[in-house]
Amino acid sequence: MATQAHCAYCFESLAASLEKRPALSLHEVEALWAKYNTDPTITDALEDKSSLSPASADPSYKPAAISRILDSPSASASGTRSSSLQSGASTPSGTGSTSSATSQSSSQSNLVPKDAEDEEEQHPLFVAWNTVTKTGDHRLRGCIGTFSPLALSSGLSSYALTSAFDDTRFSPITAREFPSLEVGVTLLTNFEPAGDAMDWEVGTHGLRVSFTHKGKRYGSTYLPYVAKEQGWSKEEALVSLMRKAGWGGKEGEWRKVDLKVTRYQGKKVELGYGEWREWRDWVEEEMADC
Image 1 (cartoon, rainbow, N blue to C red):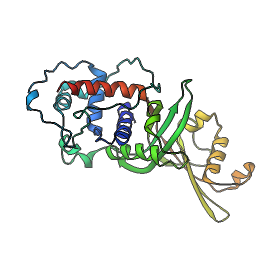
Image 2: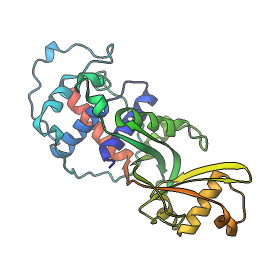
Image 3: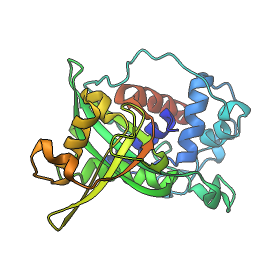
Image 4: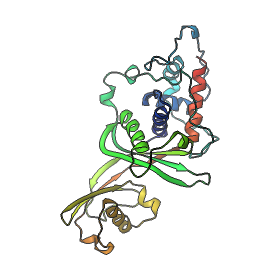
């Protein structure tokens, strides 16, 4: 199941791309997110400051504060931290600048055993970006994913950028828009062929359909939350999905088409810019003490 740390990692990946700096790794984000939510105040003494060398010229440098946070026994714990910023809220500030120490990420190989990449959890996944207006309206800004299982460290980062910059339905997301964004991550599971086109449940299953009509092959998908959000019945969702694939037949004739339907599951988890920014500011404050 997706987590808010996964969402924070997507924000971190996009912010790093827009700011042209190295991003924190998924391992670092997960550990720091857990520490932030479990124990907002870090009391570890930040000793040996004089031994720290500048990190700006070395992307593989790992700031000492990150090392201490990640080594802390509570860094892997889970918890909930109340926030004054609501999910999806935007602020007038931009992505912000980062110190030379905070903007550096250690390579993942420095943080996990060599064989951890092979053991890393893999999932088909989708990353969606929305802009949130001052009135709270959500507008899709990009959504792209894959049905091929990918390691989350590379898959989330890759598709966070692909959905932000390469969704041909929209222009690329800009730094100016960044404070208005909300990200949604869906990890897909439980793929199985449906007994028939109606063998699925609204709000539970996503659909992937493929069919041939007049010698032309079609295919398309809707994620598990789409039909429920749109208020569609099963039939309305199927017709819309066929239209999305490019089918131009009459609405009442959809049943004449031999549909191959795969159903799957996955819960979307969302995070707004405000919550990510508050976490990232906390990280920067910790690093500033180095």
